[in-house]
Amino acid sequence: MYQKFIILYMLSLTTSLAKSQTIPSQSTDSTLIAFASDTQAPMFVETLWLKATHNRQATKKLFSEIGNRQPGSLFLLGDVVNLGYSNKQWKPMDVYLQNLRNKGITVDAILGNHEVMGRSNAGQKKFQQRFPDHVRTGYVEVRDSVAVILLNSNFKKLTKAEDEQQQEWYKNELAKLDADSSIQYIITTCHHSPFTNSKIVGCCKEVQQKFVPAFLQSKKSQLFLSGHCHGFEHYKISGKDFMVIGGGGGLHQPLNESAGCLPDLAKDYKPLFHYLTVQRKGNQLQVTSFHLKDDFSGFEKGLEVDIKKPVDSVLANVRILQTVHANAMVAEQN
Image 1 (cartoon, rainbow, N blue to C red):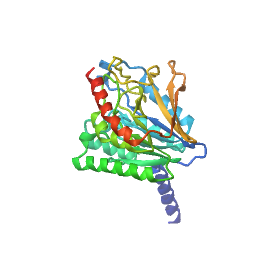
Image 2 (cartoon, one colour):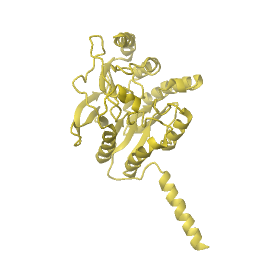
Image 3 (cartoon, rainbow, N blue to C red):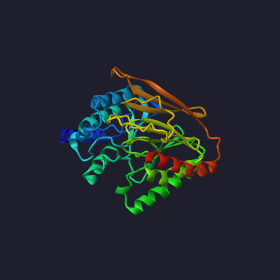
């Protein structure tokens, strides 16, 4: 009887460890935050008009590289897999996620359009099983006085009440974080990019309308990260930084380079596969993009941006927003 009890206890303990988010590790850097987006494998239909470049291999190398760099946290900004309901597509991703968590790296995520594609409810259920802290109407995580807000930009999959709830929560959370003396910076993330020159997906007007105004009004908000466009882009809007980081493994998308396009600060930095790290260094955020070398031999630092605390007034940001909308519309028309 006693022997049977011991066996049952050991089985229970094993199950509890399997369900845990992370196994604590002393080797990770809790102040280093990593971000990646669009790690999904290419779909066959996409390869009919976009070029494949050993994308699955690149994604595997990207997760391995992040594990070796050992940030305290990784945030995935949607399209983790190409079909959220597919067990087959989750199989390799589960290995990557578990490897990171075994090293003590916490991994959180937000929904992309591929997680809700096709059988949406099934896709969201499988996503939630892998990211149990996820809240589909927005949530926040704090790392080393940096608040990371994760929003759901799949507006068509939200009810009207959920859409309004998320917008209200976002505004209130920004106000709360702005008033919290322990928070120095706020980073907002969502899947769909408010500003992009992508010829495939374009700017998301709903993100511009529902998330960007509150972001610009928030005094501690300095960085807005998104994906959806498979590329790297960097825009300065009303004195604040917007980066598109969709380089996790999806097929690379062509960008509009005509005279009417949005002014991209990273026009000379267009890697195929990349991820981002953010770390607070005194009174600034150090943002670094690492990209996979052309020969796939490893990753190297490709771009570094230091974001200092704001000096421009909030009211000026709000006034300039109308010009931003106009420029984005012109870029889409071209």
